[in-house]
Image 1 (cartoon, one colour):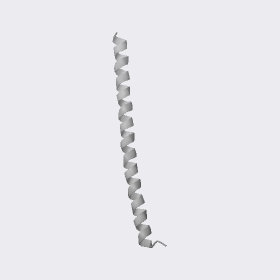
Image 2 (tube, rainbow, N blue to C red):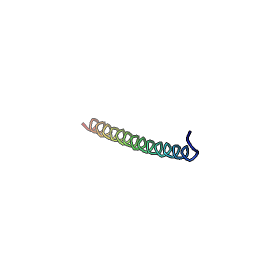
Image 3 (spheres, helix red, strand yellow):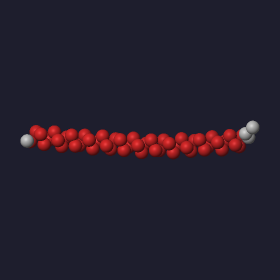
Image 4 (cartoon, helix red, strand yellow):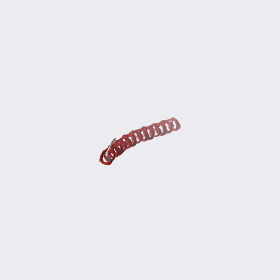
Length: 53
C-alpha cells in the first residue's frame, strides 16, 4: 500500500502533467486563433480587391 508521501508525489506529478498539457493546449489554441485571423485578413484583402476591380 502506498504511503502518504507516495500519494503526494503521485498527485504532484499528475498536477505537473496537467499544467504541461494545458500549456500545450493554449499554444495550440493560440495557433488556431492566429490562423483564423490570417484567414480573415486574407478575405478582407480579397473583398477590397473585388470592390476596386
